[in-house]
Image 1 (cartoon, rainbow over the protein chains, first blue to last red):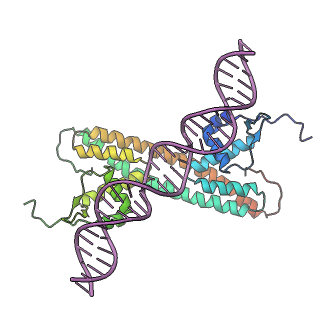
Image 2 (cartoon, chains in turn brown, purple, cyan, green):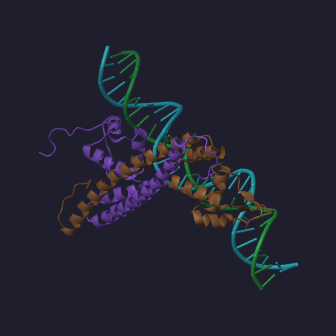
Image 3 (tube, each protein chain N blue to C red):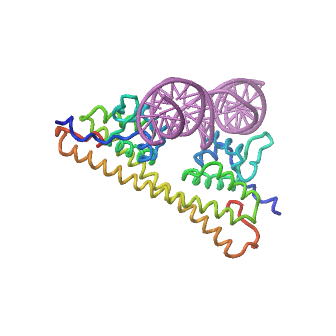
Length: 140
Length: 140
DNA sequence: ACTTGATCTAGACCTCGCTCCAGATCGTAG
DNA sequence: CTACGATCTGGAGCGAGGTCTAGATCAAGT
């Protein structure tokens, strides 16, 4: 029954690279590093076939990496999921800690942006007033 | 006249490290890499003395680095400032490009945050409903 | 059968941004 | 004068996160 449905469409490493934005090199690297939940299936010829689960997980990985989670934490998270139910509190802690770091990061970036925007404004005003008005604060 | 005022209080590398959050190693490294606008002054004995200009510039550097500007761009910016007036348009372009990257970064982070917050919510709800309710989407 | 392009493995290599070390010197407090 | 901590230089080393190479194999089109 469960084994005879339409064959779940599986993807080659190249297709997954396209869909996730990771390079094929990075995909193999992630696998070696134990960042995937399960082992990737193979064809008789040894080529990887990724399931949609794999791809979903990878898309989450991409989001977590994009927001600065180190590979070590990602690996830890993968391990928790791999071990199956029973450690949801741990997973929650891990994600929530990361969420807080992301919030802090956003705040820091917004501060940076305002500093930069102010400096951009200084230069723009200077240029608007003409190029030849002399002395400049070297730090401006 | 201009040479006999109160001696501008200058700081040692350790004091600058404290004030900027950069390590003394990093400060020497930045200098070697040409990331400072001018050469740092030295005492007769060869120790660095940083002016408040230096410190201000370093604080800007810190903000730019914090927001992800690569050292190469920082160096480029320092070179422009070092060359003096006349290239304000270039400086503006450099900073404005960076501002745009920061904006994009903030947007990306906010997207990440919402994905993460959603997952945190999923786990939290699961835990609130009790630990023993069975099957789990492995990607959850 | 042949060609072409994607994929395979193991492992070397790379960039970035510091960090640390060794061994010498400075400078200030006792 | 002596100690001791801070600083000096040049260069090696490091951790993160991939990236790339070589040489072989697989799979699909003609």
